[in-house]
Image (cartoon, rainbow, N blue to C red; front, side):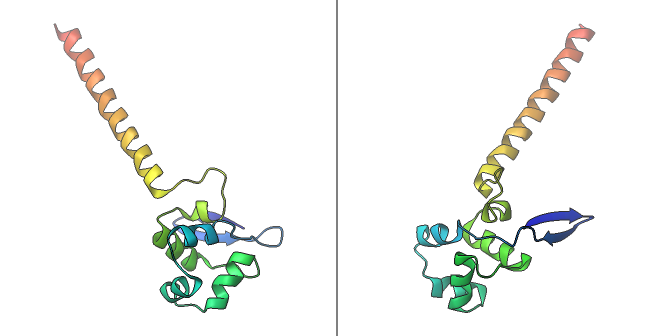
Length: 117
């Protein structure tokens, strides 16, 4: 399964018979959450969570989004995209990009001042 974004609309494309959410169970356990607790948060049955973890069923995009919010990870991370990161990792990357942009603006302003001197 992979996600495709077309003009602000996400489309889920299934490929090769689906996916097993190998990261779901470790995330759930790491957060000290039972299948029952996660099922309650998602408003699904206990067996649905078990089926997600075993690859019997696949969550829809709305459920993937809820899972990403509950565990503070990206949807890409949940579906095992090799380039996936946690939301914290993404925030750090954005902060670095903002700092780099600020540094570039300062360099440009400094070079303008040098030319004017």
